[in-house]
Image 1: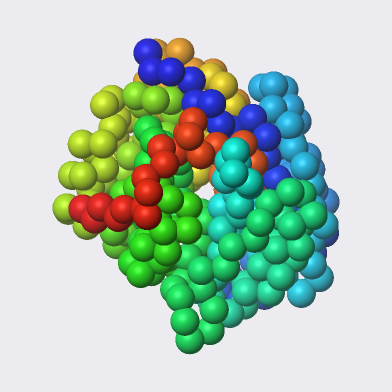
Image 2: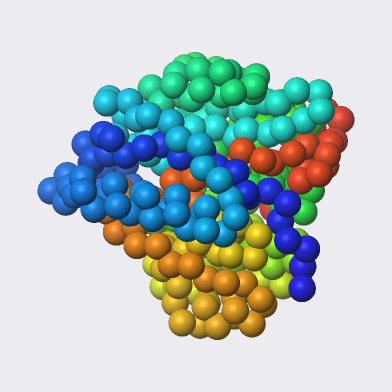
Length: 294
């Protein structure tokens, strides 16, 4: 059994006050299939209850009226605690429809003890979306391609002073890393090779001592878009084979219905942003940073 992840007990979530589908920026979004506000709120509260029931906690942020996708709090930024001072690398969204979210995220992180860091602006820097990044086994594992640009990996490595393991995403329906990869503990992770090009799929599988290899069909249930609180995996779906393996590994599976949020192409990990990733514990310091591409 691997060591339990030391991060993943404190989360930021955005209340779904203005959640709707106003545009289509992924294959799951359709303007004629709108989320029901009552069910949306109930599903959001169920995620909060599941996190708290597993021993975690949630801080909430109000949603901007002009930012319907802001509920997907994972993509607001990448907060990292450090003895030298907490920092939050803010996302620079690929699509302009979501870029106003960063203004609110910058203010929230600043008010909560983080130094906001901007690595992308119009004409400079690179697009980076925090849903593509995981702290795992001392490195920052980052997916790039559909949403995060390859250039952003250098920015992340330099700004945080860590080693970035870059994995190229090629599947149109798994546009963020958290749709094809989910670390479970220090030894186990869910991996869907179909999400990546061949070299990155091999590299990611080599990185995981004991992978739970997902088929494309399994991954498209959004089962990897889950969060782990201790030994509890809070999931939007769990195919029978996946559940069997997780339980054999000593994890408790808690399912939460998020069908309304799936209408915009996001599930539980998209809706939650961990606030307790720590440099020196979860990420190993690397002076100047370093990028490793598959």
